Length: 247
Image 1: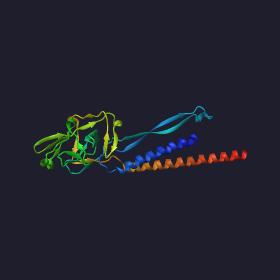
Image 2: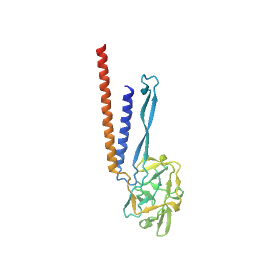
Image 3: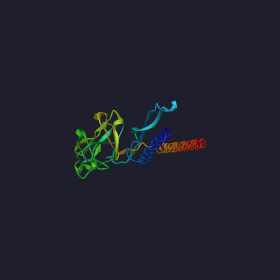
Image 4: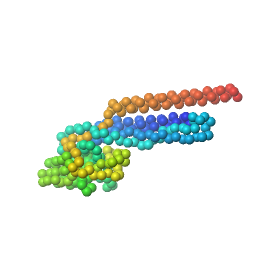
């Protein structure tokens, strides 16, 4: 296989990667707090000084460089549930994973577990100040109020406070599945700067029409790449035929 075919193959692999990301965005268009992802590609230039044609001595390939998520805030969807919260602005709620590690999420659909702790819809414990779970007496669960600064209060007073963690470099925040993210170097936002809106959830920031348009662009680019591949095959066949006649 010659270098032109390798270049086309690298492009087709990149197009497949783009299509996978777009499909995942579309599948999560209604997922609470989901942030659309975007693939990142870099150019990889291979130098081949032995090539006979000067223009072929630098060959450019497409290199998959991972994905980044769009941090644009989704719209507020009112639910009427006082335990549903949306973070206004940047930042994430801290939750505890199965193995005790910290994860982060924008999905603010909270509830009270059987153990009397504030947890996510998937059951992960939400961590408050000091990295500790927020304990709620079961007889106060029906009367909880979450204030704009994250304070969780019942009839007897404040029970804890939801903390919001912000990352200076959003590129270091990586999705790990189930609407959770991992990240390093996050800083807890001071209480006076926290802005939570209760009674509703943050919608996904995926725009289905834009994603559909991107999907069509990918399909057209793939069709163009296939036509180029067919043209290269035709050129090779003609070259072989001519060499055969010359021989």
